[in-house]
Length: 451
Ligand SMILES: C[S@@+](CC[C@H](N)C(=O)[O-])C[C@H]1O[C@@H](n2cnc3c(N)ncnc32)[C@H](O)[C@@H]1O
Image 1 (cartoon, rainbow, N blue to C red):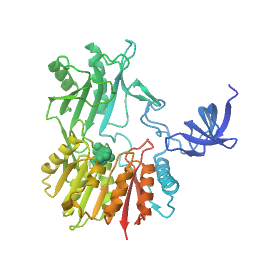
Image 2: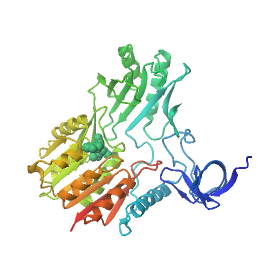
Image 3: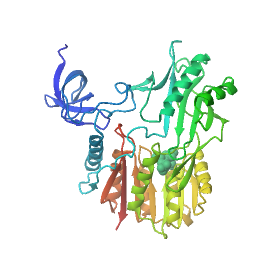
Image 4: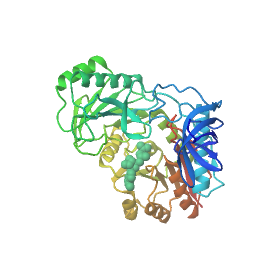
């Protein structure tokens, strides 16, 4: 026992998933512990305005606690809330949205609806990225990041977020690399070969794409590799090899080779087909992507006279789904491969009233071509950073009647909403949609209207 051990009653959960209580009036953050619980905690850092603490033991267990399913839960960086009942996760996620809208947005009159639950609570992801890791020539690992450690990877046995085929594939590749003595990339020494293993699986069409990311060079004995892979996991439909020789530790490559199958998978959302390539953005919870988009379309209420500007359009999913209901759609996206996929998806689905522009949203809005200025509705689906202040300014100047904002970060959504409301838009309600059970992430959908 140390002098720093104190009893702490957990009152709330913070945005980053940490638990929050007070010690002598000072706010204290701790990993583990759920609201209503009393824990024994060790203060590890004491700052003038807050403490950080480590959980030693739970003294009083809350009835919102459930047993975590995953054997890796105690240390995996993937799931933060597997030990919190799903109903309570939804309550805390909604509260996070309310807090942002009130505190950051300064708006009290916006109704925040109950959080729409994910259809699947486990095995819901269609994409997982696994990392190889080796240090000082020791035994390598293949798996996921340890919580709070960007540079530590633990050997995964079974993850509950993707399918069991995905788990089998991780075991197969680890065994294959080990048995064949293929060197694993050491991020400190910048040598070795195997770097990442990305698995993408469609939910509706049963297709599986593997993306093997390595240092420069060919995959050794590719034919034997494929024979062994298909013998163990015949469900795999395509395999891609990406070579990344840069020091940046990201699972994309500079040289991409299709080594098996068509080089893409095709997922179905509603009645449309979306072709997904190794580096294409696609919502990672396919079934819930439909729920997210439907929630947006229900408030947008598209009509045949609408002209829709889909900003941050990625591979064009939202624009392509809304196109049959409106006169015209224009999508804008920064990443050229995403724009190529968007155009490919338009052709695949026979959508002809849509055009895509490769551009930074700010630049596009600064010089919207004259013939494109009469948009009645904008769709905004930016990354976590939200809208650039210059984009907000231009959107207000251009003044569309309706703006559908789909956000993956309630804090930046609330910040941008404040500006739009100050400029005369109304925001009656926001609906949180859960795409990522057991994590603190939440999507928020809101429609801004003018006049
Ligand atoms: C959350 S994703 C949305 C994708 C799409 N709406 C969907 O549902 O599949 C955000 C997209 O914004 C793009 N992006 C990020 N910053 C951008 C910018 N400044 N201008 C244009 N696109 C940007 C990213 O490349 C990414 O495809």
